[in-house]
Length: 199
Image (tube, one colour):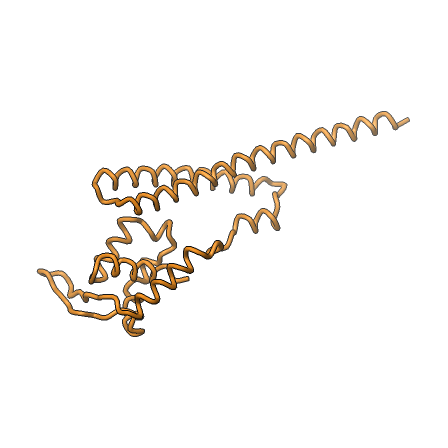
């Protein structure tokens, strides 16, 4: 799944012909590299590759003042087909990325030294900061009038996903505390039995 291509093709379809700097600006304003998995650094390489595949066409170049010469691209019919396929894949595939946390906990478990719990607490704090940042960014963009209703929905989805992860952390901490209490009770019960059976 090439999310960088999906973003480029979508922006060209929605906004018409644009140059790479305009596309990069849209990516940076929305911070899609952080939350959307788009490789902003590969954007210009991707534009050239899509042009060679006839998904895009360079329609002209322009230069304003002393700025660099910029190539304006437009989407071609093959690009519209590629956009449809990428959009369908992104919206229907439920497992786009690996679940590193799940693998680490399921197979790595909780270590005796407590490093895993420390990592999880750090992750929780990071997600709390990200949630606050996402909310602040959405509110800032709403105040400037940049966000359309679909754009707002994307931000809200990120907020819900982070909130769900935080709820999962709360549940995990509760389960770990219950397991620790149970182990302590089991250990004290075992000591009591050993005391009663010893001569």
